Amino acid sequence: MAAQVDAVILAGGMARRMGGNDKGLVELLNRPMIEHAIERIKPQVKEILINANRNQNRYSEFGFKVFSDQDSGYLGPLAGMITAMSNTDAEYLLVVPCDCPLLPTDLVARMLAKLTAEDAELAVASDGKREQPVVMLLKPSLRESMKAFLDAGERKIDFWYAKHHYVVAEFSDQPNAFVNVNTPEQKQQLGEAIANEENH
Ligand SMILES: Nc1nc2c(ncn2[C@@H]2O[C@H](COP(=O)(O)OP(=O)(O)OP(=O)(O)O)[C@@H](O)[C@H]2O)c(=O)[nH]1
Ligand SMILES: [Mg+2]
Image (cartoon, rainbow, N blue to C red; front, side, top):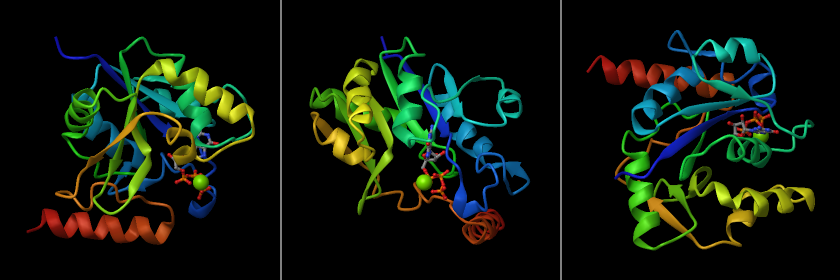
């Protein structure tokens, strides 16, 4: 039987570079940004969880459970992951950010294949050039380790996973898959690029 995988879409940041507008809800091509991620990920997992620290009612309209960080105070993406890990009973949790509209449609399959082939604890995605620390597939049992790391005042995701047996799943065949939107200018550029692509 295929392994059970749930996903958390992280939308819990402050989006300062977006001018403080809730990044998951700003519109890209007339749709809230998170909807692009939902569309890519939904066919690949059992359930989607949304992690958001404001506008929870608006987020719940997408039809999935919404969780805020357990420890308030914007402690970074790891705080959102910890919350999701306590709210899933799946074998694996996929973590993705809300601001990556072009995530691979074969993300879970390839990360899971790599993780199981090497009997690793977690897999991190790479675009072929760089690891993408907010795109991970992990076992929810890693929650204790992540919590201890955060409680010790640490924040950096790659420092955390370096402590574990991890593998890197490469998506060099899809160099734009992890394009990430942080500013209004990037949003504008990506919107135009996608629209151009669709017109060809
Ligand atoms: N739960 C949670 N998620 C966070 C937090 N900070 C960032 N994230 C998420 O982590 C992902 C990557 O972070 P960034 O792209 O830096 O987003 P951001 O922090 O909202 O934006 P900036 O304020 O411009 O850095 C995004 O999906 C954010 O929603 C946090 O404190 N808590
Ligand atoms: Mg940030």
